[in-house]
Image (cartoon, rainbow, N blue to C red; front, side):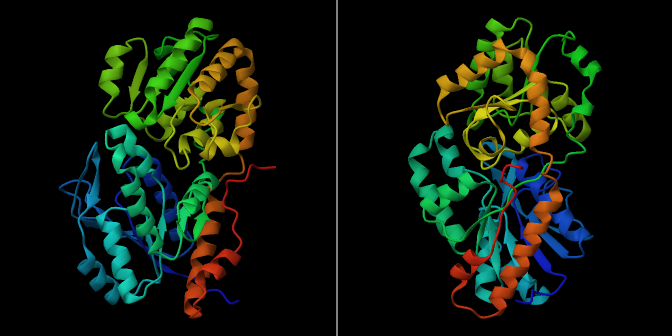
Length: 407
């Protein structure tokens, strides 16, 4: 089969993008930069990030659209519906493929326009909005949200997901043509060599004392109550252990006031974030709503053992007793037991951290760019062949993602 031509023109439609700080924005930036470096033309439609935001003209070209704040996530926006804008743009610019990253009105408009004109369109599933519902007092809408997401994604040729767990869940829920596209980690940025003794001194930590860290949005869906209770269990066993929280969000002030001994460092970026990771000794991650959990592999790359529930990135890369511990999914008592086990054996943390680094050393971003570039070309080639059996053809296309534990 001869693949679609060497260079592609791809439109990405997303309601979050760099420099916004979240896993979706970071992942998308890495993928787009990788495609541009390989000679592809990329255009990004996204909501305006400020009143002064007019987009950017270079490759990738960024087209800023109108938007409105997402409830409970005021720093992020949904884009307004814009089907007519997309119809005009697609007819004039003739992109080869449209990649819709988020499920808001902007993404919905892009899918509708692409389908009307006949442009191949794929989607991403990055965020468990249906799982978030129970944390924000609208749990009864869970089924309705899931129904919308299924309808939204099944209108596209395929849906990319970041882990095998999510792929399995979506297939069981009736999603079609689900493809695993894992996530990479910046191994040069997140490294044990970024350990900063001056930063540890700021935390009030002596050389032989331990630091537990949690890097996350400080919000209900991240299960902070469990994180703090697990830390208290460890504190009873391991005197002098400190707990550092990196991130911001609606619960930060409340939690900081209730726990004055916990260090809330706020949002950190780039090398500063890497230094915070590697200057700690253990990463705990009690969230139950991730599709992947970039911070897990970032912590492991930084040389930290990880305590997390057994799913998504944690399920793929943590080997209990070797580079961290996995608790049974949703079992808080098991999470406590593993936290206590770690607290009783702090002398093992360094070796486990070294093993954590080794477990993710094959997860550079080049592999991810290779796969999405290959899949885009195969999708286009299949569509151009006028086959009516796309789902079966898609299933015949080999793909590995990067969610297979390195050998």
